Image (tube, rainbow, N blue to C red):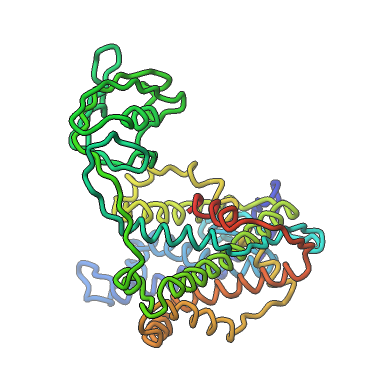
Length: 440
């Protein structure tokens, strides 16, 4: 078998393959024998038709099937012979297939880029150093109390933090517009659920009052027809309620699985532990993000388009699942979430995958079974029956494979960090966690 590989440019390759006529003839003959053994030819019992009759009736089909078989068989052989590693599936063109002569075809594909990793010591990273303060604990306890707050009707004027119930209708130049009307709409003043002008315009009024508020729409407002315009909202304020935070009593402590005997000190200790756990996760996540950014920056490469095309549907499905659109028809989903929304992320994900694989190979990193078990313990620890969780994971090869991949990636990060130029940078807990919360 003759194999020649050309490089039209970049990662693209054209592999020309010539299969000897003898191999083609043998494959066609084997196909004809299969047809003959089961062919139903009028005037003959099944499998008893003369070879010449079988050839006349099924010869063309047998040849097409044989050529398909040969291409499937010889393509990996040709890759091995040429010593190339394709990225993605090939496009194959048959260029010569005359009976009695050699079969020739061309396989078009991309190859993986050659990566020569820059020294990890050139990567400059900043490790967040974060102390969990008493103020951080106070904030978390306030949030826990707000989550269980109750509301009491008040006759005074509404203010920031109050919950109000309103009817409203907005008009521009005396005409109502789409989405401008609401009935029994309830929201918290200052929470940013509505435009600031509307929320601020309601503050200062009491239940039972009706009034008009001028509301300016920003230049980048989502509805293009409203951008930069000012509307008059006729508002009827029907109810004003002020929040009442619960006391940190026995009921509150039990609800948060804190021993009432430990009192508020026990709650604070638990909150501090939870925040320290989030802090530790946040430090790892920020370092990992920095590391991956620096790896990509230091090691630019051409990325096979075929790998991007494979990644796009996965990203679309992940986005659909987050938006509860996972059951939507694939074509409809592609219209709502086109490829261009995910191309940048797909490029990054593929590049990282290639770089991580290269680090694993270059550093000869092997999966650490003990770290896999520790990771499984950490996951199970968040459940009431940890042993059942671990048994379930071990019964699912796909879940264990995902866990192993996560651990191997952590080993890669640890290996690179151990050689990188890392300096400490003091941050507050809010500075550490807020960007990650916004990204999520």
